[in-house]
Image (cartoon, rainbow, N blue to C red; front, side, top):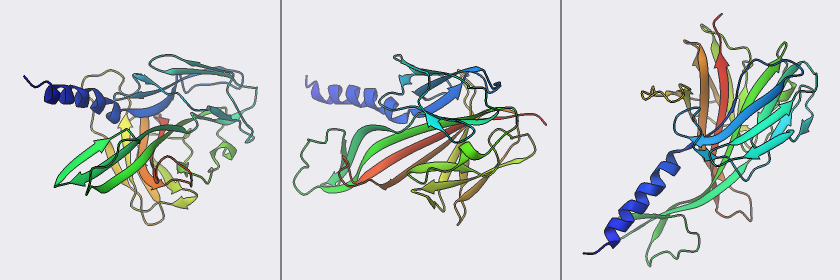
Length: 264
């Protein structure tokens, strides 16, 4: 019996779930005070927010209400998640928590003799006559805004680099019956006709609702109708050019923002 086809199928089965994992950064609670000790989980998962694979190989960043950026007090990496702790310094306003950028695997897909093949091994030679269809390295970043007291906007300022969701409506001021308006940027420029998925975070419920799919307009702006209270995850995926010297010509960007919607 030839075991190679069976081994290939088993390998594919082991790889596919990891490709479906989505990064997230989620707080234990959105209710904070100016001196609270905030705890957050950073992970890759299929159900939100049920951690499965640790968010590693990145530098976490906290942006204070005055725009000052610094590393969090504690980052403890476990097998399924990274646990972040930060004692707020007594300042009222909005804080931005970010995983920072995490570079992941390099993916190549090519076609040869009418067949499509893929590999994560950058050293694997291409077959003779192959046509490369895609070649990119994954880059993931997840964020969340927490507000102590009244919302402020200084921590919401866009980076102007990479893929990001730029809030128009404050993410700490979202209520049922209103709209969450935001823009999607890449390297500081709006992305028109960009797909955005909004996932409800239902924990380990077996029945996961289908995400709401939005598309940005010509100015890179989108609006999500807030119909039900709860916690949500906005997911954006975009392939953009990687800088010179990168491991692949493109980055497969994955950006997520966790946010909460309240009853009015």
